[in-house]
Image 1: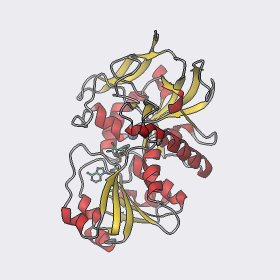
Image 2: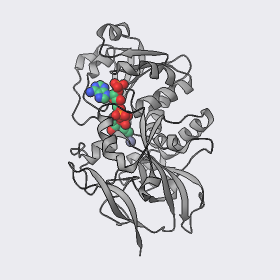
Image 3: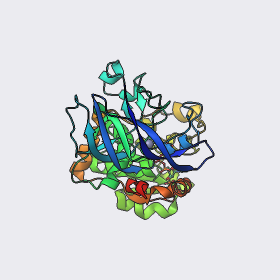
Image 4: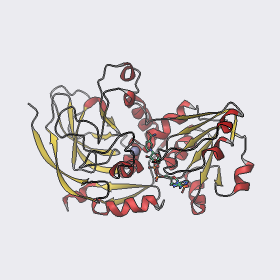
Amino acid sequence: MTTIYQAKAYSAASKTSPLVSASIPRRDTTARDVQIEILFCGICHSDLHQARDEWNSVMPTVYPCVPGHEIVGRVTKVGPEVTKFKAGDLVGVGCLVDSDHTCPACKAGVEVFCANVTLTYNSPDRHQTAPVTYGGYSESVVVDQDFVLRIPANLDLAGAAPLLCAGITTYSPLRRAKAGPGKKVGIVGLGGLGHMGVKLAKAMGAHVVVFTTSENKRQDALRLGADEVVFSRNKEEMEKCAGSFEFILDCVAADHDVDAYLNLLTLNGNLTLVGAPEKPLSVGAFALIFGNKTLSGSAIGGIAETQEMLDFCGKHNITSDVEVIPIQQINEAYERILKSDVKYRFSIDMASLKD
Ligand code: NAP
Ligand code: ZN
């Protein structure tokens, strides 16, 4: 029988409740488990969407909800069958903590599409420690070894945490689009995902153009590696880009005009959505028809690809630009995310849970 222990965490009791200090059950390590002391956890806009049940139509939130899927920590204990990790290793956990390991999606390395995938939080808990899994706003987590990643030793840990979601979610579609020398890539929305998209696309060798609604982010976008910056509320600036992009990655968390970006694509160009706004987006059929354009989506990335991304970041010394906060500031941080008032990701110093 699986035994449990109690861990400190922050959780939301309902979609209108603030996150507050709580105690949650975690399972003791079973044979293939790795127990991790969480050092930093990034705050993804998905945490906010789910804490507030904004994705109710697709994945209703079960309360209490403990968000957090950008986890970096140190291994404290491993189960007897664990071969990949040992106590003391620096590791990461992203959006997934388990799957059935056997289905075609798992075999193809896209575990996120496994019918039996276990997401890091708000997902049925196959160990039945609790009704659903609890995420990284906590002092520890216990994860199957196949879903634990290695963090390159040269990376700053607070800045590495956001790689586990914002990093892989932008890396995967950029690789698929073959971002590299001679390719022009558009990144829409300079937030947590967007700023990682800029850094990664630049390191891949692409020509990077940022589209932002925040005039005051222009200098930052250039500093982060953009070759050009377009203020998307300016019609003239947008019009100058018409028909010139093979690939645009849309990282916007709220409702916005998708047709305006389809208009910027070349013949056969592609606009990929990673942003997941609460309400459906509207798309004009002719915005796609004229030019044989495609609109597609992309979900995080596989586990092997996540390790590839981390190693790529290690090689190029890429981390997220973070503002480190104590967990006690979590509710204020959520409000600031909604105002695009963070450069460019909050990373929670989990040592603050001890205060
Ligand atoms: P974020 O840090 O809040 O960034 C979102 C950016 O969108 C903002 O910085 C802002 O950029 C832009 N924006 C916000 N409101 C806007 C509006 N009304 N109109 C136009 N632009 C607006 O969020 P994030 O953590 O990067 O996440 C972005 C989205 O991706 C969220 O919906 C999240 O749930 C989703 N997501 C998806 C996946 C996946 O697997 N597909 C994974 C992780 C996250 P500017 O100020 O530059 O305009
Ligand atoms: Zn995320």
